[in-house]
Length: 214
Image 1 (cartoon, rainbow, N blue to C red):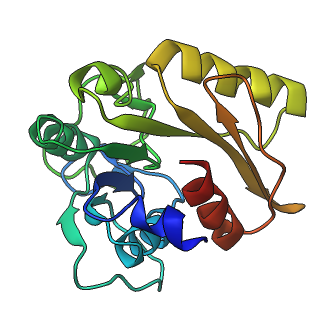
Image 2: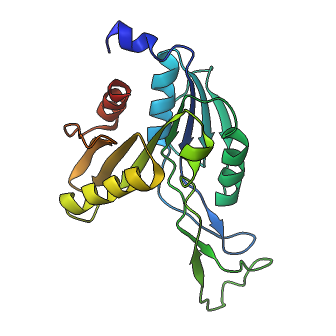
């Protein structure tokens, strides 16, 4: 990255969400997802190395990527905990918000109390949860917003359409469209002006591409 670009992040306050969220079934069991938190940590480390003041809201990460000591980490486990952390942080003067956390799309309409017996047959009634990216741009003042769209099983044109819809609906400045399947990792970045970067095939390359795009 050119030195002039590095200096652009010096002193910039960056908020990153990362990792999986879970929703409870009962007091012991949860529904979660397979996010490792790797991308969030790679981004946090890169911004910190380039002079940014980084706060990372991190779920139950399983990645081995280490963080610089300067990164402030606030942990969460449940969807509701991330929602509360965002509510507290969004009023602070961040210049950039990167929402990469793999947020639950559904929760139980009514979680069970106690611990269910393992022999019980269950029918779980799931209801949609609020999209945590919704309203972030409006609440964040002048902060730039980067969203992530994970679409592994649809055509490229359909995936680009969904990423474009996210830009328009949530006023994102950039959206990362990515997938990680048996075919390997692929990612592109779409901008609010309608432009799109070339494709990269590693998370490290995506981190570099995103920092250059900002």
